[in-house]
Structure formats: structure tokens, C-alpha cells
Amino acid sequence: MAPTLALVGATGAVGTVMIDIVNARESVPWGDIRLIASPRSAGKKIVVRGEERTVQALGPEAFDGVDVAMFDVPDEVSAQWAPIAAERGAVAVDNSGAFRMDPDVPLVVPEVNAGAIADRPRGIIANPNCTTLSMMAALGALHREFGLRELVVASYQAASGAGQAGVDRLYAELAAVGGKNVGVRAGDVREALAAAGLTDDSPFPAPLALNVVPWAGSLKQDGWASEELKVRNESRKILGIPDLRVSATCVRVPVVTTHALAVHATFEREVTVDGAHKVFAAQPSIVLQDDPAAGVFPTPADVVGNDPTYVGRVRQAVDFPNTLDFFVCGDNLRKGAALNTYEIAEVVAREFA
Ligand code: 2RA
Image (cartoon, rainbow, N blue to C red; front, side, top):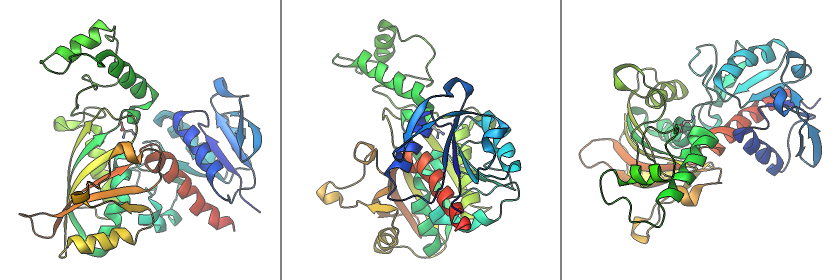
């Protein structure tokens, strides 16, 4: 029988993208599709694959008869409810940070480590953080061919990584600084925001309009930001390289959606730009845009709304043997969140065929 899918967090920002993805699929492997959200959103009607469905309130019974439950909810909601879904017989595919580093929960990017899905003692599969995910298709493909040894990355993260509040804040700040002679004197951006009344709490620790902010996430030990440690720990787990040397600097930029990363990756074996191009070209989920002489390289403004990982600016590092530098862009709400979660669910659905 075709499995039943539940979407928990159906009315949230990522849940909404998830529904778009389900609606855009040519065909789906699901029998029933159930929408679940907080009691506040229960009763809302949403059309999924041509059929109007009523959002159910999150509760233990909502998982009865569910085979695969995708969670797009805050960490604490997943931490409480994904185990309940699993106890009730569903495979929980979770897009929060609650289980990513749990040794009994696989952390999966299907084109990199789909095999890990089978080993899920808790009945839960985790989806990586969007920053890690945005580069993982490219890194996984290169690792298979050349053996990754060291990774140094700088991220350029979009405002929507901080949720709708991040997007709203960026637009408000852009409106406050737009069309004026701002950004020419230290402090004048802050003054323009204050003049526009933007003195309330921002999701960002400094102005984002006309600026870049070297901070994403929360403060962890020794001055590291949580996002930077996620890049390190999640890359190690997904790639199956527990001693991978990783150093990351995460930066927020005034982009609405689509994370970008500058990657400096060192390999066991000799690498060439041609060899890397061939590897990228062979990976269906990667689009290679690498012709700088013609002005061809990926940028968030051209990538947003698309599913693949876009790769360009591939160079052989001049002073570092076996090392490539390249630039990747990935829509943090699609492959970085909803799409990868859904792709994991599709792999699990094959178990029911
Ligand atoms: C961010 N990666 O961009 C985070 C969201 N999970 O803030």
C-alpha cells in the first residue's frame, strides 16, 4: 500500500515551501498526505496536489497510520514530538537541530550518504543545517573522487536563514537606508535605522543593510558561533570523516534567500580544475557555472528559487597542493531545508514499494 505522509509544521515558512515542492513533483509515492501544525493553525485549509486538506492539531493521535512524518518545526517541538511519531510507527524526518549529532540518528544528504538512512535505531532521520547543506552536494561528489582531508569555508548567509523575522528586518532596513547618502561614514547606517524607528530587537547583532555581519547563530565556547561548529560537526558526520579538519567563518549578508560559501578544500589525491569540473558535471543536483572570462559564476540573486547547488569560480590553489577553491550557492529554504527533507522522505518511501 502507498505510504501515508505527514507534514508537521505545514503552515510555517519551510512547511509552505515543502507544500510547493510536493505540489510541483510530477508524481508522488504517497497514498494520503496529512498536514499537521500547532493548535493555533488547526482547521486551516490548504490545497495539496489538487485536494483541499484540513490542517490537524499536533497531538499523538495525529500520527496514527502515518508512515513517514516530516518535521519543519523549532528544535524543542521536534525534540518532543519526533520520538512520539516514531513510537507510533512513523519514520520521522526532522529538519530541526534536535537530533543532528545524535549517534543513533543518521544525518543525511541523499546524493552523498543515502545508505545511512537504513541504520536509524530511533526511527528518526535528521536533515542538516542549511549552511552545511548548501555545499554538501559539491563536497560529497569531490570527496568520492579525490578524498577530502581539510576544509576551510567562509559563508555568506541570507537573512531568511533567521526566519521570517530576518526577512522582515532586512526589508525594513533597506527601506530605511534606500535612496539616501548612507554608508559613507562610520555609524551613518545605524543612525538611518534609528531615524526610521528601527531600534527594536533585530535578529542580527549589527545592521544588515549596506553591511556584512560576521556572526550567525549563538555564542559557543572559545568565541565560535553555533553555525560555525555545525559546519564542522555536520560535515564530518555526513561525509563519514570523523577527523576531518574544518574551520568555518559564518557571515550574514544582505541577501533575502540563498546561502553562498567560499570553499577551500584539500584532498588526499591530486586535483585539477578539469577533474573537478567533470565531477560536478556528472552530479545531477549540481549546476556548474564557471566561465569568469564571460562573467559566468553563480550569485544568490540568480539562484534563489532553484533546487540545485550552483558551483563556480573553481580554481586550483596556487600555494596549497591538492587543493581547490570554489564558490557555491544554494537556496537555503529549498535544498537547504524543505527539498532535502523531502528527498529523504522519498528514499524512505521506496521501502514501502
Ligand atoms: C541560518 N543556518 O542561516 C541558519 C538557519 N538554520 O541562520
